[in-house]
Length: 227
Image 1 (tube, rainbow, N blue to C red):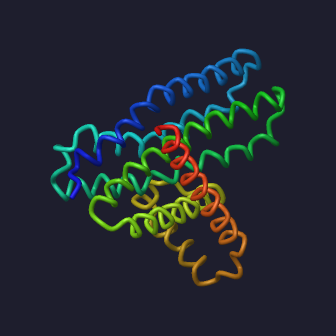
Image 2 (cartoon, rainbow, N blue to C red):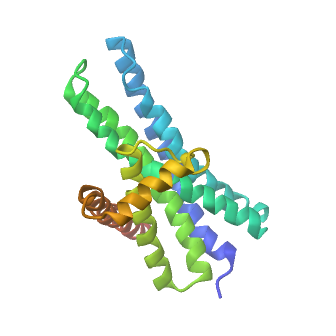
């Protein structure tokens, strides 16, 4: 049986290789945003750094779990960390919907704003994918491979559902604590009346498939590049 250190090594190799590049890519995003503010004098896209910060949280959680495994030997602490990760990981994929803002702001060239938003979205997605890969390793260590694959699809479904809730119903990750009645009321309504919420379920399905394919393709590409 593989031990934790054996499983941890390829994860740290992949994450360690990407970590500096993600930071560099994030710096480029901030450079684009700073340049836009200086040229236009407008603060229209200041929500992007906040959204990227929320996308970084699940990445940070799993990074701590793998860099400091002894600190998470306690099951209570481990499951609390994973629950926090599950709560925030949809933010990593939510940021792609910020592309919707492209049609509302025209104080800079469209190509520039497209690059600006996409650069932040790309970094957020990478944060989510790497954190999900780490969690997949934990699942693979305890359960069979087939379960891990089902788990990935379930997480992507929850991510897609979370993206819809965040974008259209305007709930945040912390509303599960600060505003649970309204949040679960909306969710129950969507479940009870699926036909009246066809657009929501359609978006959830499409985003689930897209994000699952994206994750699996990047994972496969990383395996090919390491050969």
